[in-house]
Amino acid sequence: MLDLAIVGGGPAGLTAGLYATRGGLKNVVMFEKGMPGGQITQSSEIENYPGVSDVVSGIELMEKWPEQCQRFGLKHEMVEIQKISKDGDTFLLDTGSETVEAKSVLVCTGSNPRKAGLKGEEEFTGKGVSYCATCDGFFYKEKEVVVVGGGDTALEEALYLAKICSKVTLVHRRDGFRASPATIERVKENDKIELLLESTVEEIVGDKMGVTGVKVETKEGSVDVDAMGIFIFVGYDVNNSVLKNEGGFLCDVNNWGEVRVDLKMRTSVDGLFAAGDVREDAAKQVVCAAGDGATAALSAISYVEGH
Image (cartoon, rainbow, N blue to C red; front, side, top):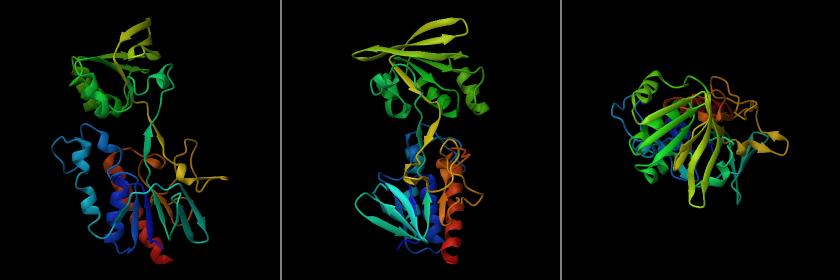
């Protein structure tokens, strides 16, 4: 019987493991099917994490987290949890091959990039359509690409691509961005980035070799933009499948499937906590996810001691 089962190994899960074990819980396991670190390891530049004054990649930022967080006894199981249920006061975690029992559970499974639903998107995914500039930007060295989106991620990835590609066309449906002022200013000052605001991508076009361009509907009409690659950053969908069962969700979620929590990261189910991007109104920042994880761990300690 685990004191605490942590599902997810990003900043929230790792920090929770550190605080839970250091705070006295003896049997804490973090279930993460891959290497710990989370989605942030795909980011090219991090310049706003407190205490880290140098601009670093996501991989560099997360490099030492697992070692520190496992120092007090946190165990990492490279197992994917399929479903979480509750029987009385005991949580049951289904791995597909066995059932793990736990007194409390923290879900911090994060989110995945959302698809835009563009014509040609599915056809050319992996053949010019990408959701990760860090992963695929190198393939478009000295080539023209398109970025779709207007948030921090879209602008930061456009800046990253501008270092590699000959030209970056940034397409956004509004006339303003939902990003930090500093990032917006850097984008506007970059000569290699062309802005197409109040515009939408109508279709991704290509041939057997992959993407060759996009059709964009602008205020002045339709235009064809040549591009070898298109990078889509239009938000995220939370990874909540572990909480789904035949009757719905194990705990309360909102209309977007985000887990409802209080200020202590407690869900509507006693002993079940959620932290990071999977929770409602998450800021989707590393420092916020880490704070969530610490808060959730302290709440889990109180819950387990009380039971």
